[in-house]
Image 1: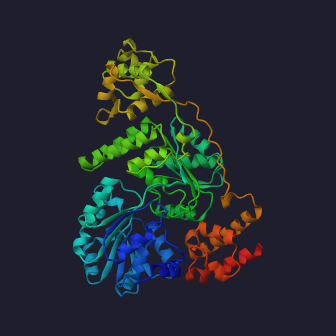
Image 2: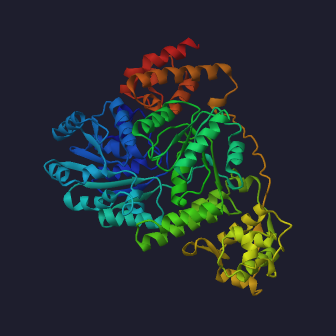
Image 3: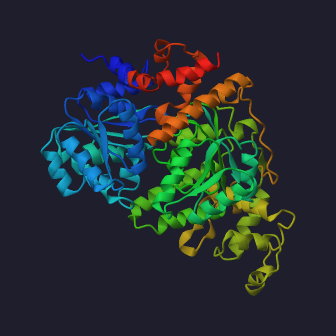
Length: 599
């Protein structure tokens, strides 16, 4: 019987498995297929890399991004594991060399894109080899995007027929119950065992703000974050560039990233983000999948993500080192309208669109929740928890106010104007704004004209948003965003129901500074700060020399443990988590010399 922990220590440099890893590895070692859903930072990669190393035959890892493949292979090579990749960003000679090595069994693990794998020529070539396992990374793509984004992900379902003796293993950080069932059905005809290890990330704080001026709100959020790395997610390419320029003018080190940029520009942006501290990247969803930067301290959204699952994926890029990190979502009605339009204008089948609308509706409900954000988020994934005491709703519980009178004003205005107009026009009528559109349609003559003049436009926008979230109103995309009354709204009009709304704060309160006690990066001890700076400096120098991200040399958590333990010998250095024999031989003396200089 193979001792997995010996391999774990001797190759990967870890003293113990993280929760869930050993169960998954043992299942794979029995040559059984599985789907594993594990939160970001839980160590998914090791779950398939360790068995791949021990299997008699070879392993194929299907990965969606070139940058992700490069990082994973660089990590494995640094550990002395024979791994390679084949992708379009490599020269023809390098691809041929990598394939030759795999074909001749010199290479144990090969990373490849779904597009390259599912070519007839590649499948035919692989049939001549003995493949122990296929690993499908970021497996949610099969269910979420397979039909509309990258059709080759959908084709991966045929692997079980092409290679009936191979293990099919799938890994992802996010998949709701329906998505899990869909992945399992497509990849294995429901033969895989599903391992679910929870979605709770206790180190992430959650907050939502109603949008009134995203630039001002973003600056408030970033006020004390000049020395932190983070990601700001934007809805459009133009917004990423506007956001990066705006933050740069405010003194932040910020760059833009989106799919329309030149490949070299994108690669440079990603390399900078992975190797530099204190850099903010303003990005569309084109950035982030597989990003393994441990010390991302915050994620901000200045527009609404596509769904609850997308939101969870994106905030999951913060705090991979386990340290406290913050998330902020800023959204408004216009975001909801645009997102619904994206869904309806896609080439996906109607059944897929219906599901995506439901996922988006769940996210809007999360945004308007008056209870613990973590409880609302986890409930979507069929989990529960105690109130987190660190989200905005726990720290400052929102007040619920009797709002039936206001709701009737809105509902009657919508009814009198024919349920044909968007929220801006409804608000103008409510507030008694006598503009051309109101005058030409005679809406200054209806009974509710001016009834809401004592409240601001921002108030009414937010109030209507809450009514949409509460299913009293709906946005009709086919009628260009017309606000219409639902059955629940009719009950209020008829006097059969009341309406309570969450108190609307027109002035966003400043967030209290959180204590950083116990976090080495902000220690008040100058010596420890200086040592951490020196360790990071030599790490960056080594990383640049090798042309890899800094974390591949050592992650921040390993540097922190060096500071805590202050090893004086290679034996003591080897006891630090993440330092196996290969890394000890390559880097041990270099980092020991830095630590000794501070004694």
